Image 1: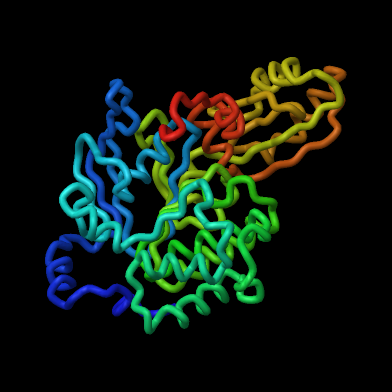
Image 2: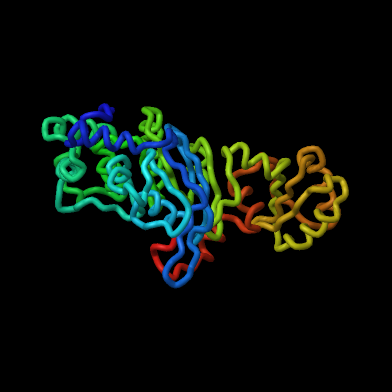
Length: 352
């Protein structure tokens, strides 16, 4: 990656002035961030975050929870109505220009110009971000190689697949080598192969020192990529920690039992009345059968299977596993994340 100095055509005096305005080493620091729309809707309600430089930070929640609204405030696309917000040391309200020059932003919708080639799209972004003319050719080649588009750099973007357009969009957000990049659901709608290629790309730039703030609906993505996560519901953060820490808070192990017939409710009743499990055990019905979370799920799981068989309930499969992030969502909200996404109703596309 190219160095972060010399990327913008600003004077040394302007650079020193901007540096003087930096007051923190955190990439993102918010205290009681509020965003209330003119109709009175509290989209963000008291969000406090501290994201250190170099961290890969995940921001999770269902549609309508406040993810995109928060990221738009951090990227200076929306003005907060309360609280304090600093990005790369600059106040987003008092010094939005310095914030914008120090970040990259990849929105949910791809913003590449399909009439231009990949190379031309990146060159246009270089001009917009003030990358010096003497550095542009090297920077364009570097980014095309980084996102695996070097062999199609002179083809128009209209010929690209959805995954290729996403990778090109990511490259245009990084032309000025920003220390912080916002990724708002960057892999939504991509097939698994294209998604994995973007994951590798994001991991690579993070290893090079770039701070990444990611919103995503894919819990596997957050689990694999993120150092730390925050879960937001109804505009407020309800959980925060590393993926491992959040999963430990669910507690115990999970026994998934698959049943042959529509016996989930009866099986769940038997499991809830099964006194071999610890007192904190919980039972949920699933599409395949039931799911039991208990500290001693592995120890007494076979006893439950025997009890189900004695009740003439046919078990077709079972598995004992550690909690997943989807189990974290279930514990927080009472629903799986995909159910929350399906149920979300947006009155305004910006209010995500």
